[in-house]
Image (cartoon, rainbow, N blue to C red; front, side, top):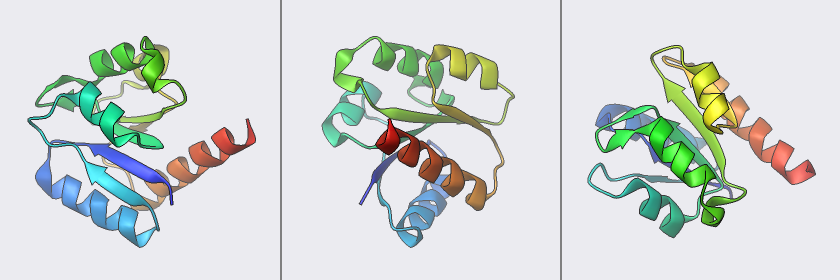
Length: 122
């Protein structure tokens, strides 16, 4: 069962995403807003990280750049999300995909399944 880590600091959104992941057959873990993002991702070793650009702990783009420079995170699929149109910046920083909020649940699930299947065939 693929593991999805949810780096989202809106608690209502986090609960909804966890429920959606469970309904779709994914294991999910939410990032505690007090946790060190990089250490939590390393410890949990998710298959996919759904990373919000704007987090209480800092900027998701900065975290992504740090992960892409660290070999411990090789192979990690990162799906970034924001309410601002930051697709180009996120992809340039190393995101595998970007979703503009608000997104439909089906759009998120399709993106996750596509990214996982792409990794499996590469």
